[in-house]
Image (tube, rainbow, N blue to C red):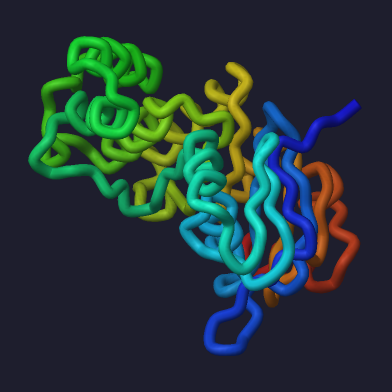
Length: 248
């Protein structure tokens, strides 16, 4: 029996009258990697930002665990409960430049969760070790490579102990060699039971590591299923065209 940890039901999000998400219904199972792919402007990033409440939705429901976000405004306590379960990593890292790697990871547990500095720093060191940066705890962002910064950002998101990690094109600004060190970390996290939902153009990674591929175009899901089906034997013309454009 499968269990959807995250479920979108007929979700609509509009900007200036245009539907960026147009009746999206999709589920994401616990402990899996889901890859969101599709053309630019198709609604992928908006979907992620709607799951953790950064975007309010115009209609529909988003369920995360036992909590449900509804349109047009969910109660503040529901939004806070959802955000405690959902971490997010962005393309541009968004690290605090005046804090070390350890300081970046330990900041939220202290300020938001009320952890002592000693406990937050101990957890931060463990998380930085988990993403392969145990020897970079005292380095500032300016002293780190792009791949290292992104791994610090992942550790920072994990510091709040989320059940779901949302990743928005987190390797698109990295050199090819550095992408792999970040993607390897994500595979390790999935093996530890974390649920990952990723917007990505890394088709090779999606084919190798994802359990579930969702194709978004024009605000609608045009196809979804396992990588072997969606990427290797796409059923829709829109998916076929997108893959041809991406893979050449």
